[in-house]
Length: 569
Image 1 (tube, helix red, strand yellow):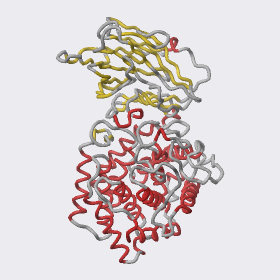
Image 2 (cartoon, one colour):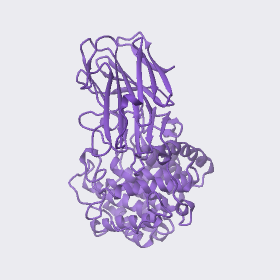
Image 3 (cartoon, one colour):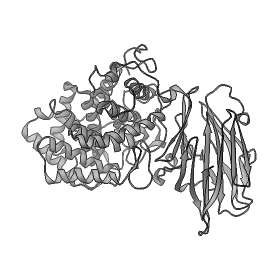
Image 4 (cartoon, one colour):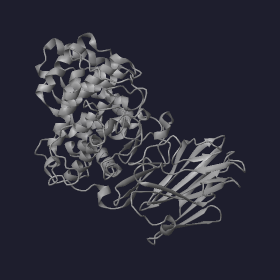
């Protein structure tokens, strides 16, 4: 991708300015143009991975997602071909929006794009095209969504239709229903679950916040904007800590092929005035994410976004992933809606949280502990509260980072009797320097896990209950890779192969862990000592002089497998 030279004066961390973002958007839009059908209604991008919705839906997805990028770019010349495609699409080319169908997702992108480019595109369309467009979009108001972020797609469509004079009872109902549904999933502190359960991931930012905040902002509804904008600001306070110094977002959750869509909530806060971040910090984090992927083969030799993280990677894909799916990454260009003279573009980049100092930060609602180190720029996420069994490797592991990927050999797991399952995750608390949870393995076997951290060092303790004596237990740590070094040192209950056996009920297993990019770190036992007292009390003393104590106790004696909890004392 041909971008301007780095500007290390205005952007000392990333080198990127608005000119880089504009050039990247232009390059992405130019690269997809040859794959448009003659009428520009579909974008049939190359690739062998057709989504479960089929080629026609994939072609619509190609139109809708690149159109949203074009809407953020606000280039009238580029928008002309999308106007042509819209006219053809609603004249019978596009599939109808049906219950729980992919076109419902794409209808939201089209409606949002039209809402953002009303003067440039919508107001210039012929009346028959506008009527057919409104009719096609109207199906999205009553189509049944999946019970998750999809509930916000009818809201987005309804908001546009109301703006352009198509307010109906159906549009009002769709907006009210969708906004009411997400209240069921708001858990405080700026965090939503993506539907029922405890599904915390990047959908918080690029969906659960994005759509309602933009709806409130575009509708100029001060009451809604205060509500949703306030939640966004609280979310960004913790979210900003999930980016590595190299710009990498956290490698956790589904749809990771959307890549720099992770920048969307950062820009959203700046755009609507609801952010705790300084303008220079917003751009540092957002530009860091864009550069991270552009420097690592996110686009192929034809300038197209690939299905993967760096280059192509089928391990990241879901059944709904098609050739054009990665273009939800276009949401990351939301910042182009800010005027070129806005401080988010003109201010000198400021350091992000990972650049400033080592930190171990509790994030209460998802029951996460975020651990970052300034020396190597690595961020680690200790997961003691997020779960989605449909995408197990990206939700069920005990830890994720900005420099590792979940491995097929069950990294960051507790394997009991050969079973690495981690289901029915119950958060047990998170505090300064620690987090804990309990999960089920199988057949009444439960594991209560604790992590305590300082700097790059971790103490991990796992209490296994419900397993018969002699059951083997193996503990794994960070997946080894080409970057930072992964270490795991047994302390209690395990031999040098990190394997032990249950000798009583319960059985306690303790390790020291580290994921570090330092060239020559001190040995782990010099940095922390662990003492187990009375079988279930853990005393941790760090080389810095700080200390912590934790106690495992039975919380419910009435079950066949007693439920254990852990508390800081």
